[in-house]
Length: 127
Length: 505
Image (cartoon, rainbow over the protein chains, first blue to last red):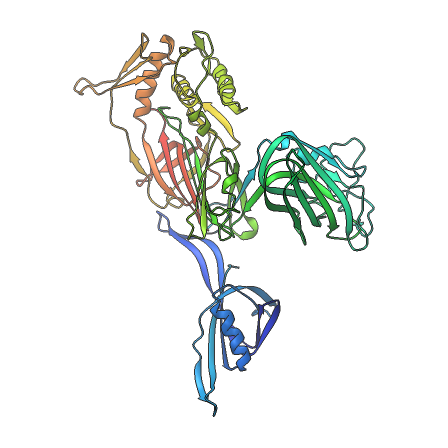
């Protein structure tokens, strides 16, 4: 797992939305089927690793929040671009958890200012 | 194939052809113009791959890296149709391929195979299907195609002519290169689209039945193509006989996966719930057709297995490929009465039993009839390869078999201890002769005393029916056995159930 302080990009409506100021960690879950043979030996059929990206923003411009919330609430698979641990730029389709932003403060006009915006992206395919 | 690697990677693929099965043989292809290398008749010969990447002189095409070859004059090779026209600097071209048919056909779409060796494809083209009155029944324009295999769904009903107008090649200065045209859609499933695959293949050890092997393919149907209620779906074009070819493979890594041909099966049913994301196709081997077709009994009082297979082919109207053991193919059998009401499946089953053989369709589609006998051991099934220790069972103990043709011919075999209670089994087989009856009775009694091994295995796609294996039991004792049933499942990994029988007691 590595932690990057760079950006994520989401492809939406024919263009890329760059989400800067993001801290994210990259992990993954092994997808496999494990069987214990009659001898006691454990073997497995490896299908791959499903990448997960835990992304968090301390603060985000309101227009970016709105864009991201719209995309995430569509519940579809999101075309995401990110930097992998080896420095290469990867792209793939991910499902996204529903974010749980907190209200930092309210402006004088009553508009909320949000912070601590966290989303977990889970890859559609295994690698 | 490394089927028993501790860390194993598995793969599956399937090809399902939703095609008009008679269209190719009824098709006459013509074109607006053909290059000298063109062999237009090949677009309907069933070959979907070019033999070579041919060395030709279109602008910016030929690399001098040895990848392209010149064909010797007269050398047989697959090229399909190449247009005489060459596209301009923008890829724009005007070339037409016309397919005319002797009778009306219906197809779910059209699949065009372009040059797979040179990876030269046409990006834009229009398909129009016409009926016998010259009225267009379906048309569709494809743009931006980048695939060597380009399938277009357009629901063509009762067409007698298809015109494909090619308007733009993917690269400039190229000819249109069409290797094959298929009236229908060819669906390619891989591990990204297969949810699960289950295959059951079986032999009846005493030929009391003629099992039908079956495959069930469950796959991504999020496009709802296989929903019965979808008016734009494929359901209206799913007909008995559509081929489904299946492969399974495994290896120690993704790069070393070897795929094994598991055989070709023929569409039987499909199922998709309207609220589900998957659909399931069930397909069976050619024995399914024998179940539904009456066996046309030829004249004569005797027959042979070889003659019966010819007659079964004629009854089915198909040319099945047979492999008959030479020791039994010419053995005389009692013929059925000409007014007998018997199916091809029953006729073949009775012939196999009368000849002390088993019958199954092997992975190459060959209907195989042979005695089930121990051969070279292909595999040792020990505790490292089995999930459970083998379960060993026998049939109910019988000590007398009476085999008869239900009329005047019968044979008896008894193997009964003095203190045993008589346990008799009667078997009726119309094809028995007096020369065969006693031997069949003896064989059936011995077969009934075979040990049957039932096992759950790791999953080896290479194992075939009738293969000889060594089964290691819970006490470490080796038993030689022959595989009579193989159920193999793929769902990302592979697992299997195996049944095998020992030699005759």
